[in-house]
Length: 183
Image (cartoon, rainbow, N blue to C red; front, side, top):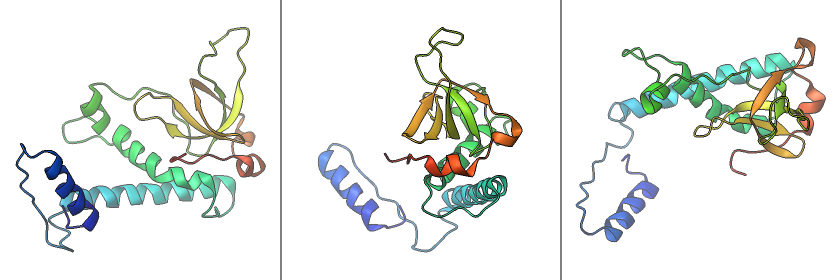
């Protein structure tokens, strides 16, 4: 632990609830970034990837994003997923491959790109299939469902189709969309 009050309180509560388990607290010196090495490196990498994603998003939409826009709440999560699914380690595998045993194979588009998505339950090619428009903010970590912002809130999709190039980054549609990771 880094001696943060919330972490220390959690350790104390867990040790009370589990008296049969001996907890040996290991703390790093406050402010000693070397002792928190791997965590510090991971935070730095995710922050860097998030900056790249935001820059690319603003370039695609041709404007600075307002900090209150819902899409910005998704950038850090997506940045971490990009690293986990795409960065190849010294063993030749991505963190995702090490976790699940196979390569990530879902179709991916640019963060913030507007797409047509197929709601879950609609069968491809079925008579009732209806594609809906949404803004891509990533894939769900466990289920692999496509996550999209829509005017009615966050939606999950079972498949996506890209729009023509000139229609992928429409500011009017983006401004109507809502949905936050914690909703």
